[in-house]
Image 1 (cartoon, rainbow, N blue to C red):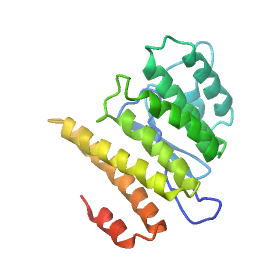
Image 2: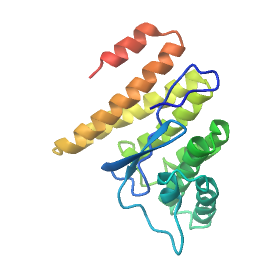
Image 3: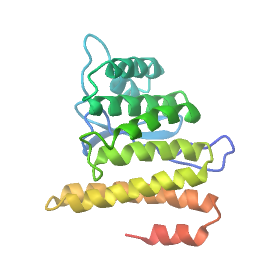
Image 4: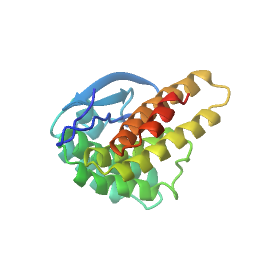
Length: 207
């Protein structure tokens, strides 16, 4: 499934790994045609439903709850960067996939990406890849092809590094290969919009 831009010229898929950020997934949900893959074991909130649960339920309240969770994460010690990265990313997903506001979602994705270098998140991890993938999808919906292509290339390279880091775990490596192929297909679509047909075809032929 894909989300068409207002100009009706592009389709893209938004990947959401869920709160646990695990590379194993059990379900699929969609907001206005944007597909989300959802993981098991989302963190439970205290006395209420969580941002992750509302995203999974395709509930419009996700925007408000995800923003509240982001505000709470911002109050945590500066050393707790991972919680802030996830909170910014999920709020961006809510703005992009629920509220259909790609421009507004960029601030959240930018904030998450800015926190990555000083965090415990490794540049060969699922977490690193998906934040760039999400921002690329926002750029793609805005028809900002150059920035979308740049972020998709980063996501692709991150998945390539993740495949190498998976070492002797063939199941995990295969999972990352599948995700990398999804990124490549989306990247090829962006290249087509840029008039780079040959480059798009070469990318699709890459295994």
